[in-house]
Length: 255
Image (cartoon, rainbow, N blue to C red; front, top):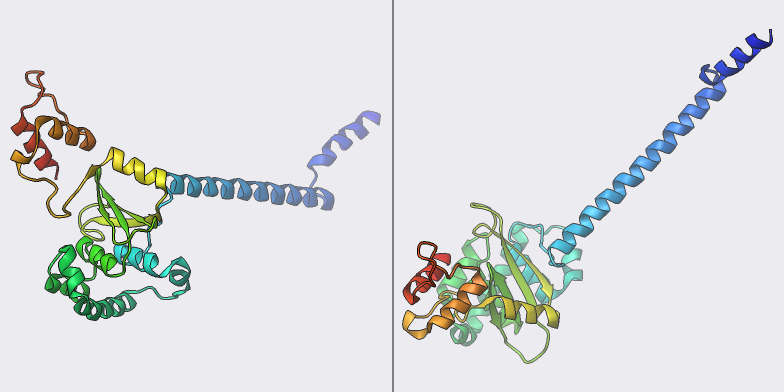
């Protein structure tokens, strides 16, 4: 009889009575809560890593990323966040307003010479995507300092003497997507980061023409440019340093 009682006691844990069902449900709920917490933590880690990897740049989620970068830089992120419908209709309305402003600021447009007035007006009035020349022109009109980076190069637009400068970065997204296959993000400059950009990237004096004529450069100048653009300066066939013409042509091909 004692043996029988012991067996029955051992089986109590597996019998689906009210107490055991209640315990099972509690265990299942607790496990689900733990799993949800772990999954949320994993998602948070992924978001944090993504933000860190992009150097704290903010990339607008709208299609015309460069326009919305300009909007935020000009008006602030609070005003940007307060807009419920950030659609193409609203963007077009703001762009048309800038067509009128450009006509009043013709001298500024001519001074910086990023593009002709007619081309800038056409980009604002007719195109869905803002191009970099129009963007820089708008920044010049609004007296905004910009450090623009793309593919190991940078262009600096200084319109005032303040330390306030915004860094705008373009990333290639693939053919046929976004602004000519690019997406744009921005961040407010930190001195160390700006200095790092200027020391490690190749400076563009002209947004349209990355290089001057070959006669302008010495071999040493071209080697420095190649190093910043990560272009090989040694001829693989003979193991010797490339000639001046070869270096120049390699840089041309890069752009």
